[in-house]
Image (cartoon, rainbow, N blue to C red; front, top):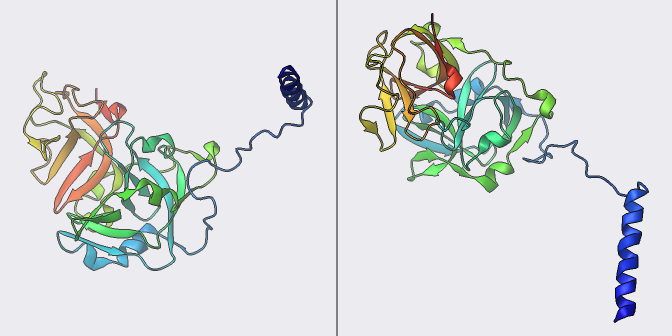
Length: 276
């Protein structure tokens, strides 16, 4: 028994010495540890062209269809679940358009930071319209579109570059006034609403004071717009209890649509900028 112990100790010492001598192969982090690094960068189309391929999917309330073509899209993340207001989904945008990608996973911001560039292999995924908002995911309640599983998602995207390719300022918010009349080409984009005022701000009301929608969202209106635009805030968002400023603000967010209503999704506290 003692001999066995001595042999074991000798083996451990030998292993330690080998590591110290530089024979140990340190793990390589040249490739991102998330996603499918075998995805190639061919057959890439713009997000706008992708949406144009499926016009009937977004024409009515809820539909979905499986993508059978071997096509891909490439873009940068403009919004994720970091602030808790985009739940299990993120927005992807290129120079032409934007789309929501829904994944049944918490903490997407851990590897899909704002400004991260990715490529998505679309074959076998589903594209659909949730109240006419273009979305990539999986079938939900037969006709609607919902979240794909985490395991499916991990096989269908590739991170382009590493930490050096995270550029939060690569896609600048569009002035909402210039696109507010065009739902089809602009829903899902990162936008800015300049010098607007919360309709019900009184110095004490928060973003989630009011009637909840769907059980965990509250819609706030702005004085400058009618009921066809709302600031939609989850009661679970990190900034949910923020008191609505009574002065003018610049608001940055993801401009999703709910039929013919704009829903602005603020991503984080810094998206609400008080105008002096």
